[in-house]
Image (cartoon, rainbow, N blue to C red; front, side, top):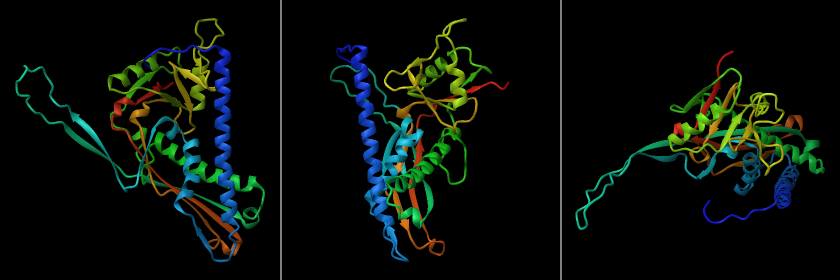
Length: 320
């Protein structure tokens, strides 16, 4: 950032952190309150054989929690499209530029483009609840239904991002041809592999903003000390968020869907999470009529676009 800087003491920084956490808690509480209220309203439409197809704005009751829970949305850049396909233009050759004499003609040249076509995949979560639960006036009942649907979709999106699932799933980082790779030792001894990853990403025009790995690998790295015989950790704590660790100033994000012994260095600007409009939340009282149950279904379409593959890095530990 340019310009001057204002320096705040630890007390001011702590106040700002507390205020931000309070703001986040209030926003989450508001979103869940809306979800609870709407689900209760929908489920109380108990006329036999009716099906409540919710208006488009209620899709936000699925979209917002998924975005809050999903690592893909945390580490990537959200892009919204109303079309079936999303086209990302990729510049393959630059315009020719050079010094010319004053008054001389400038020789024109063309910039060449390629296209990356993304078709968002359909992710769907379905929860079946008893009518007694659907009619329960307790806010916690509706809250759990909303959380369950959002959690299912968020988990499925993250699983597709970090694993090669094939089929109708979108291609993620595990399918990415041309991703930068770094080989790490069987056991981490220092942060050299991460320094190499940052360098490779920058060489491709990227900028690693997050490290994503599993809990076991994150714990192994967190145990590194700054010197032999020292008890002081090598990693830097992120003072803006309690409990978050950073590697080379970049936050470490934990995901159970990253394979063992793998760390992904993600460049946020080069990971587009393509989200199609039309996310839905439907409540049906007829499909499970014979068992006196109610179906609550959420659907969301998501795809991934990574136009500069080498901007992302996969660090893999050597086999033991």
